[in-house]
Amino acid sequence: MLLKYLDKMSITVVAEDSVLYESPYWGQHGVSFLIEAWRANIKKNILVDVGQNHEALLHNMKLLDINPEILDAIVLTHCHYDHTLGIVDLLKVIGKSDFPIVAHPGLFRLNFIDNPYLRHVGVMQEDSRDKIEANGGALYLTTDPLQIMPGLVTTGEVERQTDFEEVGIALKTITDNNKIIEDRMNDDISLVANFKDKGMVIVTGCSHAGIVNIVKQTIEMTGVKKIRSIIGGLHLVEAPMERIKKTVEALAGFDIDSIMAGHCTGFKAQVELHSHFQEKFLPLQTGMKFDF
Image 1 (cartoon, helix red, strand yellow):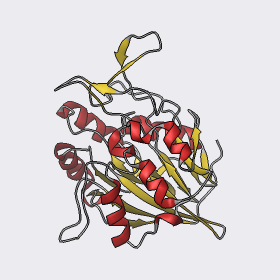
Image 2 (cartoon, one colour):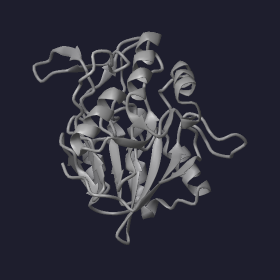
Image 3 (cartoon, one colour):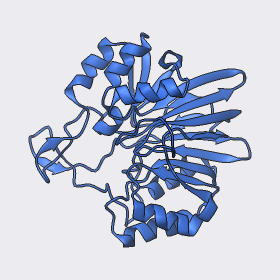
């Protein structure tokens, strides 16, 4: 696809597992990013994921001087509760009708683990499709890349191309004919911003599709090989060192200016990323802001 260009963009980390040193922000297991995007005198404010605690999210928004009413859309990168829980409560605060919620059509399926015990880890009942729509949400559910504005687009469903990447957690779902199967997290999508002659910024939630797969698809989708930054979770927290090393080696084969990874990335993977990318790598923390 022919991807147009943003003039500029800012990304604020509104929710993350850790917080900036000596800051008053609240951490939570989950992520949320405010994307402020400008093109041709038009500005749009996009929230990527909502974490799992709307009170902590709103607390951080207040400290960051972000009024929820300025939001123009929300992108949900995948179904998990630590990225979707409290979206209905947030919609009530936003107070708009026909408010775009962008996600994969598999968002509302049953998604569960059975170790250490059986529990659903996807979208919870209080954030059901019906309740989202009843509180002003207009769902844009597609497997295709979706343009939020010229220069800002989702990846759509990501093709699995590598032989070493995996979901990163033993997830299951139940089919329409009542069979239990492995859930490969086909709903895992990312957000891509493009800048003329400067490359792309990729914003991920957990990279269950595999960060290398995501980068490969983004390049194939846009024809742009330059990556200005990768920001988000890489879900290597429980990955064996072999996979971590293969991931870092594969990322090193791309033209990447910076990687800011946190949440589900894991300490071992962060160490490996820092060892290779040095000053080009930063661990994510709540309260950080990046300008492009």
